[in-house]
Image 1 (tube, rainbow, N blue to C red):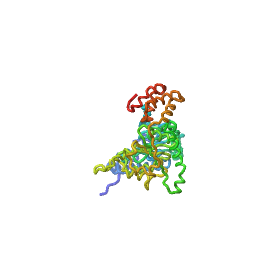
Image 2 (cartoon, rainbow, N blue to C red):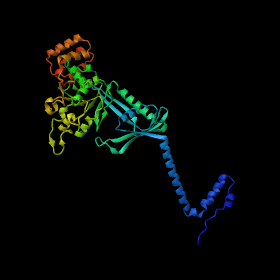
Image 3 (tube, rainbow, N blue to C red):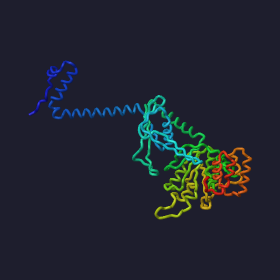
Image 4 (cartoon, rainbow, N blue to C red):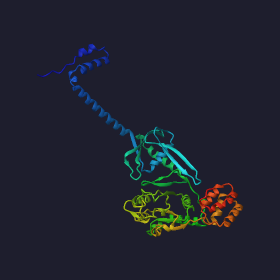
Amino acid sequence: MSQQAPTIDFDKIRSSSDGSVSGMMSSAFEEVVVNNPYFAAGGGLMLLGTGLALTRQAVIRSSGLIYRQLLVDLEIPSKDKSYLWFLEWMSQYKHRSSRHLSVETNFVQHNNGAVTTKFSLVPGPGKHLIRYKGAFMLVNRERSGKLIDMTNGSPFETVRLTTLYRDRYLFSDLLTEAKTMALKIREGKTVIYTSWGPEWRPFGQPRSKRLMGSVILDEGLDKMIIEDVQDFLKSGEWYHNRGIPYRRGYLLYGPPGSGKTSFIQAVAGELDYNICILNLSEKNLTDDRLNHLMNHIPDRSILVLEDVDAAFNKREQSSEQGYTSGVTFSGLLNALDGVASAEECITFMTTNHPEKLDPALLRPGRVDLKVLIGNATEYQVRNMFLKFYENDEQNCDIFMKKFKELGLKDVSTAQLQGLFVYNKRDPTAATAMIETLKRPNDAF
């Protein structure tokens, strides 16, 4: 027996309302929905739910369409050079609103032992808002919890900038401004790079260029080295025309404290180059990573391998740990002049014990010029004295006379500098304390 569909009593709706539109709608809702047996049985709720779901999908699709039409994103991955430029720019940008900050601590130890610590607050992971040239931009710094750099354990990061589509041209202006600011900060300074996983990263703040005259080597030695480097930099076409790999290696050897590292810094300052320091004794450094780093050195940079003898003075192989150093000796040789070695590379190696180096490392093509940076000669002593006590020839003669009388020979330039720094304004006191140079391990 079929059941008739319920009818709607319009007279009842009119009689129960107060005559207004809202009253009519309220009475109609009660009559159609509340008192309707179909809705009571669940059919109306199903229709209502379906309508709400369709409405939700329509809202999502329309909002996505609006987003694609009105907004534009720019993603900057942490592996891109502009990533650090942008963070540095944003940390100093005034028109920004940040609720999430990260601290970067720069620790610098000066030659005189003093320590300078500087804290910089940079935008941390999270959302930030900036206003650039009248346009609002949402900055979202995201740190991936799944993608991790296995070489150093740090997560990959990205910075995503979102703004109106009409303002998309501002992205290029912003990145150009960030690059200009970063280069201006480094202008007239030397950037020290260290290896961080498979890439090079700046270590601390850029340092003031070290002047060539601030490092005093034996007579004519500094001039000979810098002229050789400059001649190499001008001879790229000559190398290519003759099929010779365009790279040059230098070995500075001598006792500790003779100024080897300081002179490399002076060479970098003279050439307006940066410095990339690579520690061959690092346990996580492998042959492949060494080759990758040496083939991706930042432009206009000198590669420095300090104390190269320490990494390979024990090249035994054990069954448990492999080679005692992270890099094999053959891996270093191949990185220096193998098939996959870098072009247009200037490498400086230093050692206190050249007798411990394998002859295979010293052959031309790996080490093209070997220079002894020894203890202070009379020429160096005199010029260092006049460097610290300008134009004081009289006290300089007295100091040199006493220096010869004491028969001082094995005195490093580091010892002399320590003596002069301790008596920075009193040359007579420096002369009075000259006997301390006999005992290199004594403190003033």
